Image (cartoon, rainbow over all chains, first blue to last red; front, side, top):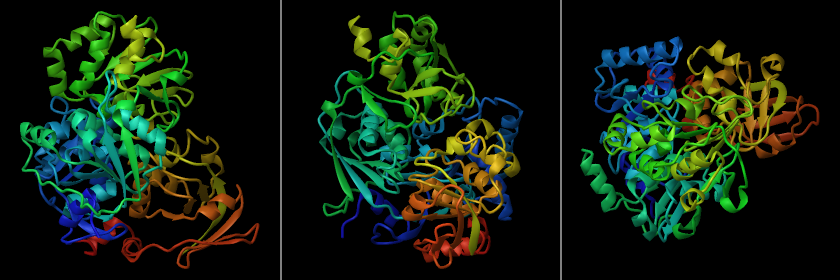
Length: 422
Length: 164
């Protein structure tokens, strides 16, 4: 029986010629990552193993992004624990304030992952790197601890959902709209335990930024991982970011899929996920007038340069609506610098938005834009669960950078077309 | 292993943000995490949970963030077992890795009422509701996972050389 892309990567990393869905394997890992919230738990567990070294100092990365720059004393202690550990273990890829960015934007940008890799991270959005043709999935801190020790992790080989893309995106529609549309169709457990395998002629019209955004939210459909077929665009991206030699795994023609979902990109419209689940996807024919208090443009989902360009195009020479706090967070130092050199930061600041140093901050209700009771935000982030961005009585609406920027200008949830036509 | 306790019931898609809100993730202290367990979905949980109690939930329990703080908070609060129609996969992994017993059993999760007395024999894969007398069967874990659990969790299985 044939294998999917994910199954081929897992076979190659576990010394098996073939694997099939449901099989338990022990796989060698190319990269193990953690952040300032999950790594401290992993470090404590690692210490219990009694090992005095890690499996590879170059295949582990820790990124201080969630509550960094330190939001309080406890956060400062957690970052220090990571800093000390990476120093003790001589870990090469430790990213602290000044070098750090939001992990899932930073790692591809720094060329730490390439096609064909097997990656785990103690962060659920580790599935992002599937955009580059890698198997990559989120795990917990104990998995991270053991992986730091032995460079391996156990997996149940996942069954798959095939997502066949055709057509191309229309103006003001992006990867975010695609993934919200898909989650709206299949639900937050629509791909539970499975891999989402993206393929089809529609791939060609999706930028790497779009693909990273789509793979990033595979976990919001319950998936173990999302993975994209590798094409020239992927290879150009990997090479230009200094990534290691790619290994391309193509699905066999007779690979087995539990289900196949056909998505016509040309039919997708700007999409918003209503509280309190990412599956509550709606398009503007059923949204109505919803006034907002805050807009957040950033996160591992949508804090890349392409996202800031999309937002700036709409906010240029326009003012943020009175009473709306607009927070823009470039995901990495490089994105920040590029946005500055392109004049995007000036556009944001002149419109009345603030621009922050990279941090996950508000996405998980950590800091840098917490919501009060009854407040409503449009965010380009990935989760709109109860209390995700602050008070349990607040609301988060998930959207693309273009929709978020348009909403910033009008003060209510708005399609980019409302602003551009006006 | 036999688990005995009263059911505390929840619906579908209980996410890790409500199990342990991110505002408490600046610590990894088990007692401190337990003090805020389920706070954003059920403020009464911490007061009413008794050692041994069993959470009975719907589909996709533990969805969202990979934070291990979620199963840790549940375990440290005294919960002995979580029965759900299905679990989100990272939560499922984390629970096994830290030694919180969990089991997927859609029928039991559907029928068992809040407050019911439950006895679950996880070696035999049998869940019994004392109040109704009904029995439910759940598939036991595969060998590989049983080895991790029987050695006391993932850390112990690496320390003992089961995973090298």
